[in-house]
Image 1 (cartoon, rainbow over the protein chains, first blue to last red):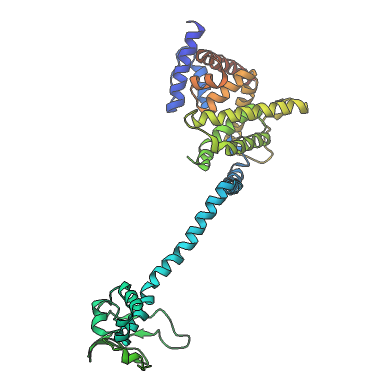
Image 2: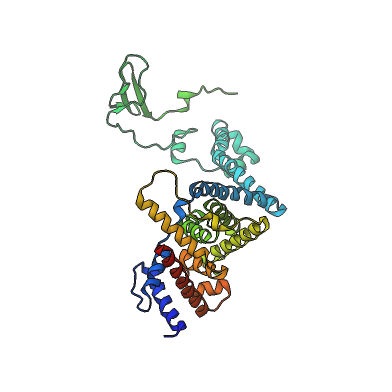
Length: 217
Length: 166
């Protein structure tokens, strides 16, 4: 057998050995294949003293590389302007949303003007048009005049719960007793009893007079 | 694959490849460290469409070994025969010592090859690359790579058999 043919056969068997790790009988030269097996199994990496430390250092550099990439990004004027604009948008967006949420509060005094001075308001073009432009008050607001109750879920009691505060002294944890539903004039409520106090959580329709004193200018 | 995964998967292979060339454990650590530092620096620019990650990494390793050999020649250092595995002074289990001696003999046998054969043997047995991949990397023909491997193994076999008879 020529050397080229022997080498080809040897390499075929060597590839199979490297792939599946099993030894094959290389008939022309079993000793050569045995040595190839030794070389394939040889692993000197256990003698490395830097394997772990190098890994940690490179992992650190990898993170540092991200910072470096950000730094180089900021060195570009266009990128810097775009990023600054994006940051401003992100910062201003919550403020804009907050103002949008305040819109009903702004319309309330205008509605109050209509309630308190209906005749005068009707004769004045400007304020009337402004009043018309204001959002329509809800059905509750129309029924209750100036103030409308905020839609609330029905009051319900819940099982006993341990209050997540323990007393500093010798007392036992504060326990909130189960609420007791009661009927009230113009509404309902839940009476809660704690160790030292009894209080009532009420839900009832109120009039402006319950809260404010009306004065005529 | 991120860089840490690449490191975990290929550290041992690259270390073994470098060790076949460098032989000295401390210097092998240095060169291997340089290989992975260079790989990290170029990792962002690595294009998987151009070459498998193994070929890319071992190209870096080959260059690092070439740089190390040039630097060693400039320093005019002593032969690597001095780097033969020295038996440890601590008491060791006989099997472990034997294993270390075997490893030392293998390294010596590889070191006895000419530079091209050593490089091909190191690539073949540490990276597990195919002869075609090695041919692409070294610029040789695929069948030529096969013949170099076969001849190198035969030469090492003769050297080792002679040593074991002693």
